[in-house]
Length: 356
Image (cartoon, rainbow, N blue to C red; front, side, top):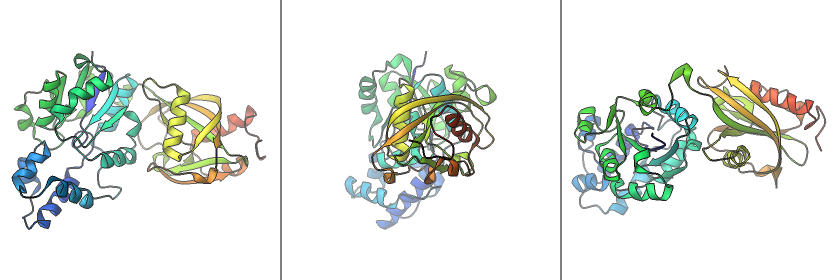
């Protein structure tokens, strides 16, 4: 039974090929070389990327190439979209109790930023990035994470990923969504070859896609400051409506530990006085950005320290500290409105009066 999933990032979960190609061409022209077309690049690019650069720019030190790569890589919000079916696949994997780890050659700061911007950062126990040779790193990663090879699959889009998985003795899964073609992937003889991630849950035995996907357990909280105000956050994920911070529970986490982690990641606030309010069975919420079924575990908490020191992550657009009555006047997503009303009913926050 597959219990652990090690995933490549580029070309497997995130569609960064256009940005990587653009960056590579900027580097080539910097040194007076001609640009490559997409197909030319795909035909010659390989991992470890040090070998690719030895072919095309053998006279340039690796440190200089790495510096230029970071300098020229596109940083716009749409530079690296998530690949089709990737988000649903990760949701099903987490709901099925799988442990998820990223093993990628992409720079750590890029993967960290992209994973947060794409709303998938919380799915992973670890992001192991900036790896030059995955064939060397993967065995050490298995040992560090306490994962058995027989219970682990490595999913990637390049022959190097398959070779690394075979070196570690794990199940190898190739997806033809990125850098290597299906014909090229076949030469490394993966255990499984798929056109994309949509059919993998069924093949790996941890769920189905679409309307049969199991619900996702999440946590969220009304955060109250010392002035009795509630922290309201607006996010594109809920159709630009106002709501509360929160997110998915990781495997092995308690709900309160997940709540503290998610609030710290999304607002940079520490919390105390955690009080449970209710569970909401949120099925196909029309305001949410995609089809979903959440079990929302909702709390009221107090923030620790200066409430003005809120630092939002890439998922959020804006925040406000407001009295309860003013918060209820916002364009709230429905689960947040239900939470506020229930918190008032149970006496955790008074209506129209600053809570003490």
